[in-house]
Image (cartoon, rainbow, N blue to C red):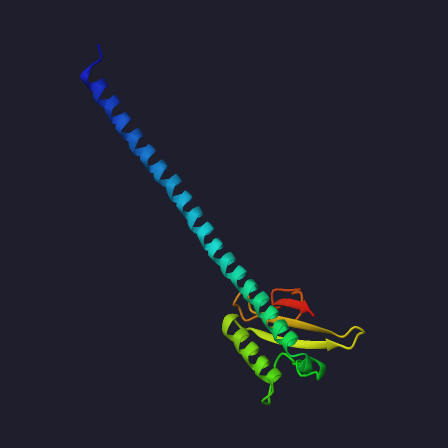
Length: 158
């Protein structure tokens, strides 16, 4: 038979071992939760980036639809506009460009848009929409981006 002293020391060992198991389980659980938080943060960032790219695509299609609806304005080179230029006048094309630039500025962080024309043949228009996807003050204009300082861009040729 075991003595009472041996039983008590055996009980203390079991109790201490159980506490150690609980601490290890909490450590594993906390590491898992930290990983889950990091995954959630990454998912939110990627979702926001996807949203911005979708908006840029929709804005590119918006101006191309406006240009297709106003062939006379396209033929008159009224849809050519630089990045920092503000459209003027009371024509349909000027209204289209004002609304388009306002939508870019509203929907995309640091968003700008430009439309250039290649005389061809055939005559083509290149629509470029740029925005600061990382929201870190990017200012570069390479399209496609070549460094972290370049704005994200979406280019569409019509």
